[in-house]
Length: 343
Ligand SMILES: NC(=O)C1=CN([C@@H]2O[C@H](COP(=O)(O)OP(=O)(O)OC[C@H]3O[C@@H](n4cnc5c(N)ncnc54)[C@H](OP(=O)(O)O)[C@@H]3O)[C@@H](O)[C@H]2O)C=CC1
Ligand SMILES: [Mg+2]
Image (cartoon, rainbow, N blue to C red; front, side):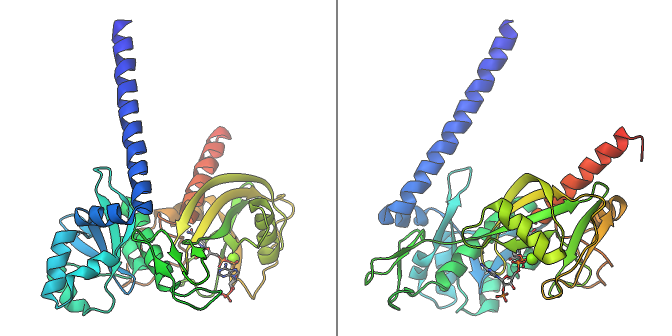
C-alpha cells in the first residue's frame, strides 16, 4: 500500500514538475513575443538556425545529418569572418524554446556568399524538401517553422492597404503599418486532407507536378466561410466525383510548401458499391484505389535516393501527415484482417 502510495506520489511530482516546466516555458515565450527588449536580451544567449535563400543549414554527424543550431556569439564571429556586420543577427525571428529553456531563432543570410558561409559554419545549406529526408524526424517541424516564418516576413514587407512599408516587432510575431495602423500576423491557409476508404482499399491521387510515382491522399484549400466537413465533402466531390461519409478526425500539421498551410487530416469512407472515380483532369493527373498490400509495401519503401530511379509507386515521407493517415489506415486494416482470420 505504502509502496503504491510512494509510486503515485512520485508520479504526481514528476507530472507537476514537467507541467510547470512547460507552463513557465510558454509564459516566457509569450513575454519574448510581447517585449522587444526581453527578446533582444534572449537572443544574446540563444541559438540561431541559419537559412540561405530559405534552405536550412545542416551539419553532418556520425549518425547522419542534423539541423545546425548556432550560438549567437559563434554566429557573430562567423559573420565577421565573411565580412558582414555582426549586428544582422538582430534580424533573427523567434521560433521557440528548447526543453533546456534555450530560446531558438531563425535567420536568412541569402545575400551572403553561400560557399564561404558553408565553409565557416562547417555545414551545407540544403533545400527543405530534401532536408526532410536527411534530418531526424523530430527536427522537421522546427526546420519547417523556421522557413515559413522567414518566408512570411520576406513577402509581407508592405501594407496591402497603403503600400507603405510594414515594420516587424523584435520577435517577428507580427508586422505593423504605422501609416494605416494595421497589424499583420503570420498566416497559414487551412487545407483539408482525407484518406478515403471503401472498406478494403484506399483512394490516392497524384497531381502532374508531383515527383514521378508519388501518390497522396486527396487534399484541398478551404474556401472562405467553409467548415472542415464542408471543405472535405466538396474537395472529394470536385476532384474524384465521389460522396464521402463517416468523417473521422486524425490530426493536424503545419505544412510549409508552397506557402504555409494548416493541414487538417481526416479519414472517410464511401459506399463500396459506389467507388467509380470520375477524375477532374484539370486538378489531378490520376486517382486510383490501392490495396492493403500495395500500401504496406509503399510504406516500407525507404526514403528516395535521388540518384536512383524512383519506385513505380511511393507515398509521401513519414513527416507528411498523408503518411500518418496511410499508417493509421494500414493498422486498422491489419486489425480487421486478424479479426476475420486473414493474413
Ligand atoms: N503534408 C501533406 O501530407 C500534404 C500536403 N499537401 C499540401 O496541401 C496543399 C493543398 O493541396 P492541393 O490539393 O494542391 O489543393 P487544391 O486541391 O485546393 O488545389 C490547389 C489549387 O487551388 C488554388 N488555390 C485556392 N486557394 C488557394 C490558397 N489559399 N493557396 C494556394 N492555392 C490556392 C491553386 O491555384 P493556383 O496554383 O493556380 O494559384 C491551385 O490550383 C498544398 O500546399 C500541398 O502542398 C497536399 C498533400 C499532402
Ligand atoms: Mg487537391
